[in-house]
Each structure stands twice: as C-alpha cells, then as structure tokens.
Image (cartoon, rainbow, N blue to C red; front, side):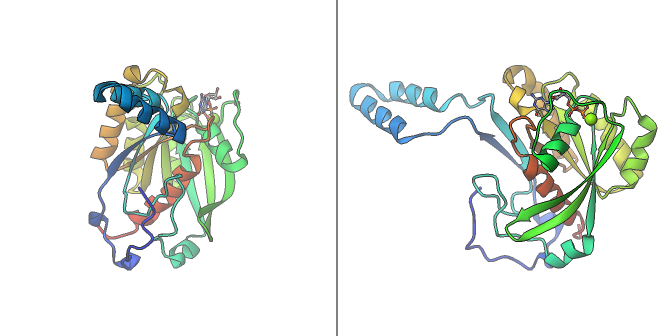
Length: 273
Ligand SMILES: Nc1nc2c(ncn2[C@@H]2O[C@H](COP(=O)(O)OP(=O)(O)O)[C@@H](O)[C@H]2O)c(=O)[nH]1
Ligand SMILES: [Mg+2]
C-alpha cells in the first residue's frame, strides 16, 4: 500500500470499527526488478515470442510463493503503510489517546521454542540469539516510535509456554492491555494446537486486544509443506477478526511493524463497534 498523503482524513474519534475490514497482503522481499533485468527482457522481446519472454520474466522475479514471501492480515485503512514497511505520516491515533495510555502492557504468549524471547530481544536490543534459556517471565520496557515524531512506552512481558506454566496464563492476560500470540510457521504444531488454546484463555478472561504473530518466516523454505497450516492460521484470524503478521526475528522482518501495529489495534479496539 502506498503513502496516501493527499487523502483527507476523517476525525479519528468519529471512526467506527465497522468501517474497517481485514485485508490480506502477501509480500515477497526476495527480489528486485533492476534496470539490468529490464534490458535483458527487452532484448529477449526481439528474439523470442511472448511466452518465452514471460517465462524469463518469472524466472527473474522468482516464484509467487518464493520462500521469503510473507503474509499479513491488517486493517489497511487503519493507518497507511509505506512501501518499505514503515508507518506513514498519515496517522490516525490521536496524540491525547497515547498520552493517556502511559505504559502499554503487552504480553507475548505461545509454545516454548516458538520464538517469543527472540521477538522481544529483536525489538528491545536489536539482537538475535541461537540459544535462549527457557523463559518463566521477563519484563522489558521500550520506547517505541510509531511514526516520525510519535512514540509510546511499551511494557513487554515475555512468558513461558502454556505447556510449562498453564496456571500463569490467566494472570498474564488479566495484567495486559494487549496479547500477542506467537505461532512458529516452521512447525511442529498446527494452528489448532498452538494458537487456539491461547486465544480461548484470552477470550475467557477478557475482551482485550489480540494479534497473531507468525515467527521464523526465514524458515519458510518448503512453502508447499507449510501452506496448509498457514492457510488455517489465516482463516482462524479472519474468523476471529485478528491481525496476522509474519515476522522473522533472525532476519529482522516485520518485528517493529508488529509492535507498532499492535498499538494500532489497541487504539482500534477502543473505538465503538
Ligand atoms: N530461524 C529462526 N530461528 C528463530 C527465530 N526466532 C527464534 N528462533 C530460534 O528458535 C529457538 C527458540 O527461540 P526462543 O526465542 O527462545 O523461543 P521461546 O521459547 O518462544 O522464547 C531458538 O533456537 C532461536 O534461535 C527466527 O526468526 N528464525
Ligand atoms: Mg522464551
């Protein structure tokens, strides 16, 4: 989605949730169509037929389901997103809302090994660790830039998996403004096993903001094998009107975007239905 800086914005306080629909975007970060590519394609046009040129074109840009493609399910008009994945200055959250919020409490939940700690590490210290000690409960504070000139404070709680400390889940949910459920797209669990149980705890405890973050997008080598689970994860999020954002803490894909968009969702959930 481009930067629609010329668009006239409505007063954010008058907006309603029903004005926004979830929108699935797929992206590929793996290729760039350069001037050299253009020159080759042009040359081929003189020598071969259209079909040959098209196959050449697709071999340059890569397959549609290139392993580095990733998905996100967002409310596209909630805020504008620039081509480089930063949030645009066309920005709907009223500054009074952010000031009133003070610290936004976000809890990261999901199975042990799904990549929760690395997601938080990437956000807070911009690092990645191959080996992390199993987490019980770690709290981090982060001043998050939402877009140029606007920031908010996050209190991020990194937690243990449900299989390790099931009794803690409800308390973590109760103490947070927003829950991010982490799902490792490289397996071994299905969305029914790894997303739904967390979501049902969250919904039982309160009507808070929830997002699904798919992790380890850099391991999406065998797209065909994963597609079944990814489709299910996206269907689940659509049904429950949850944003779904694929990330890689290792390659630093979409990590800041995830947390920025979580703040957007929190604000969005404060609007009338
Ligand atoms: N390839 C890849 N591995 C990751 C990524 N995030 C985490 N991991 C690995 O997955 C394992 C578990 O990560 P960790 O963050 O400790 O998961 P947690 O138990 O959910 O906190 C570690 O070996 C990490 O190095 C990622 O984005 N890409
Ligand atoms: Mg951990």
